[in-house]
Length: 224
Image (cartoon, rainbow, N blue to C red; front, side):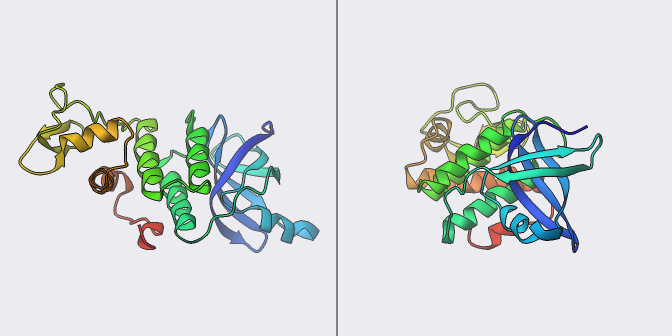
């Protein structure tokens, strides 16, 4: 049975044959879906040009089980093209999304989270702020959210103390690690202080490492 038309963004594509590509797509109201697209005939060049990341699609697909098939799609708008470091950040967001989001399982809010941060990238917001926000909000969406304003014992984080992060527990007082004020800044989505950005980046890598496994993110190697 065909799905209804839904808005979507392409996260990743790889060729399967001369006329088929495998797509990882985040779909509104659904989440992360892997689907096969047949690209051939007189519209091959046009369809190849349209199936690109960062541009909103309207798509329709079919398939009852894990394998879905893209039946129809069209570009909704041309969007804002990104270049340089901003483009690499977009690739990082895409790779992080298709590596972490479960495939063909409902994940409400995934499309909205991705689109809102993509818009922030496209509209010129500070790169580090957008990436840290996306990382921590994606973790929260996936059920791995972190309480930044409380420690592992349920006490309020003290801005004058230092904490280290313990997986599946939270923050515990320590002689080294992350300043309490930094954790409170992250809780308030305040990434303006340079120290907060630096420690938030280190923390995000610490938290993401076990979820990503042994395969490093290729997009991170570019510059992040």
